[in-house]
Length: 613
Image (cartoon, rainbow, N blue to C red; front, side):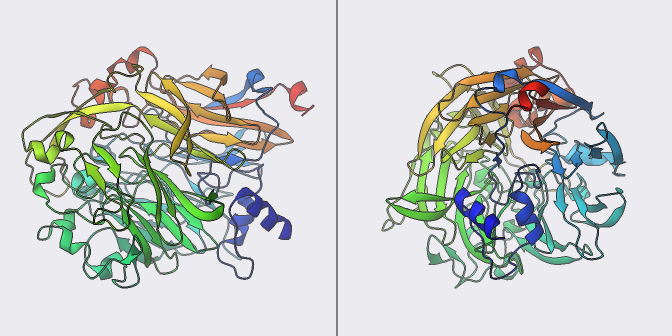
């Protein structure tokens, strides 16, 4: 345990050894680089590996080691887990789960196929994606579990050895537009899950289930009364001050908070030492800002909660009174970074709105808020003066305010587009370089809000969009960047033809990997940004690159299968330029570069090279 604690401290995240503050087995397992035990690699969401058999000097010799068809088309947004000799991964709807035996010629040991009503496909906002399964080690008489959250919101715990259902529970009602796309998170004796569907007027919530029985332990709503949000008016803070009584209710008109969005479909993180989980909330319903005056708290916010009872320690709203669909669900990466010679425990969050935030993860103090794409124009800055009544708020440019333009008026040239400077595609952090590697969108939009009424289970959007590359730039729709979260600066940036919708991976081999919508896996020098390797897989990559070691050999794996919001036109066969919430027209040329697919591709060095490393 001492060696483990030292390793974690060196990596930049420590944990308390005086008490069992988290699932001790998972904490230990996340430090074993041979395995990949969580969807984002570790609780801190680093997507980092200490493996260095594949490094910047030999990555150019990578070869395909083995492949496997998933048997499903549409967007593959997840990544495999590797525990011991077993690999586990899931597909888009119908969310089949595969268990592959790496020690036995990659044979499929078991496959789980959920029974879901296909009508759920019609209420999934932006393709039928699923971002992965989670793992819980065996404990006493409970077997090891592979945990899936299905499209229809059902949470299913499968016996990791046999694939048999241990327990299952329904987290929402698909007939009301409540769906699920996220990867669950295992913390202590709980499974933490969210909910999708803000475009259907779904009221967001975070829910904890008992890992042994599936029984609900607590649920914290994103909007509404204090008791239902699990906030304490005096003890829960925002930017260092108590939020006060009814902080959410006071920012909505009437009972709009009941269909107020703030859904929770992104990535979660956990600090075992502080014993806090972190996540972001999505857009308010409807997309027409005129219909919902006020700040609409606590949509588009970062939340820090106690995993035992769900009570909120602190909150921070990034985009008050959202007018552009800038969901705040992107990953929260936890690291210990130096500020003016002092090491701070921080949370780094590159938001949809185009600003990357660095906050003290214990107190919620705002340390940095800077644009991570120069094209961002809807706001000039986030005010950092603590004495100002605008502290922490973005300063909106009236020209790009969709509310100022008014209903049925097309506001043009807004950057970024609704899919943000980045969406859910997860970044990576390297404790060697102290840089964050962020896959981004370089896309702008025209946005025309219109009045819409709420009907349960029907779209509650209220805006028409069109998307296109940022004007007067490199002509493409994406960049892959290295970000300094202490200075709020881009160190280097690589232009891409389309949005980078794949999750990144950083390794001790001084490489960062990502995939492209055309289908290329790319390897980049983590210091310089130089391209070292690329290989085109059978379909566009929106999956998240991961790595593992088996029998002394390092492998790189990625799921390809074009789709997601950016690829929804291809995935769903849509041709109307305004369809797919505006994405179809913007990405119309993607069909010239790739097509539908569903494949796992695994890479390695040639045997003779791997044996000498």
